[in-house]
Amino acid sequence: MSGIFSRTPKETEADAVYNPEGMIPVHVGIIMDGNGRWARSRGMPRAAGHRAGTKNIRRVLIEAVEIGIKALTVYAFSTENWARPKDEVNHLMRLISQGIRDELDELDARGVRILHSGRTAGVSESLQAEISEAVERTRQNDVITLNVAFNYGGRAEIVDAIKAIMQAGVRAEDVTEEMVSQHLYTPDLPDPDLIIRTGGEFRLSNFLIWQAAYAEFYSTPTYWPDFDEVELRKAVAVFQHRDRRFGKIKDTER
Image (cartoon, rainbow, N blue to C red):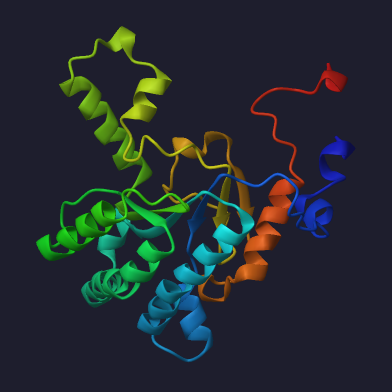
């Protein structure tokens, strides 16, 4: 039993150093947590934290390109977030809309392909149109994919996949894991290699729960608005020092 507790992630990963020649995660998912606490720690309203968090996406995206990450999925708004105060929800909707208008030209020029994961129910027609325009306009871009999980829930995604399979008339005995994966919101994206959660929590919170089955998980106490280029490289450095086995054991352990 002593071996179980002799090495903790904090002890073994605290000194991890990013290696640009090392293993780079192809797809990274980020649970952008801590906007409200960031604002409160500065005596500011929660809305200010959400504004700062929205602006931070571009900084992290640009650094992801520098590192060589090919896909970035950001958790922008969950299906559970509708339960927040109406004023906060409306503010978040306006921020997302404004973010599309402010950033689309630059993202397109940088070769960013934009995808949307989530449901459209409850989303205004005008915002749906803006999202569709961003997706369509950047469809051919190939520098990096920015997948925005908006009005998204991992369980809802699986339910929607099951419904689509049933509607296609597939027999129960013919359903496979690969088939389910192909009916998720973004079937052309590879499963994430690394899930990052800012703000210090250690939960997936219904984020990519099918796709993240073998993703490495990294939590940092840094609030999302402060998660910068250095913090992203720290996360990738830790990923580079993980021993990814995908359920297998080493030959030396047999």
